[in-house]
Length: 112
Length: 114
Image (cartoon, chains in turn cyan, green):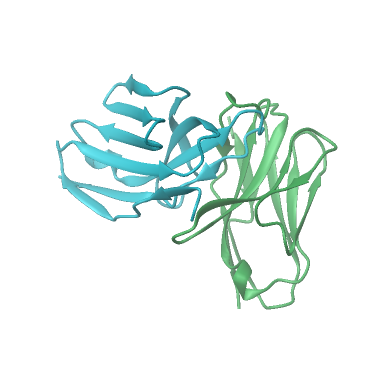
């Protein structure tokens, strides 16, 4: 079993839709959770970062973590064509020095 | 502000050839990383360097070597390329390599081994 599982999609939605992207992980030792966005032919860039269970908002983006279920989500409200990208979840353990475990990535397309 | 710069952007090798992928960062970061990205596999850590003068293996180190040349530069060498090493390679850096120090990625080197 992979340490983190992410539905690879692809996911296609109309502009303005609410998007839900999800990952599950297997080891409760993971303590912090990130979402990276990767545009075509580019490197990933950090979008959201959280340690704790619950919700964290940043503009149209909300990261949600449920440690009891080992489930993390990224919600995008009022999705825009510019949100079309691959979204990767990443998880890490304390004191592991940036050695993240990445999900496979979900390819999102937002149609005008 | 260049961030993390990788060269070359594209490369085609024949099986058995060698090459070095170059990475440099101008953010005064202490930690640097090499990842490979394959369809359906996500990003997997090859090697990392927590600080200048140190290197350690990641999840998939076989077939690769690294050199942390100085604080700015971290190179990845393929001594005898194999088709299984066809991938997109990303270099990343972080300020401290601790939990709250996000990774900054370059734009990748696309390598094909025939």
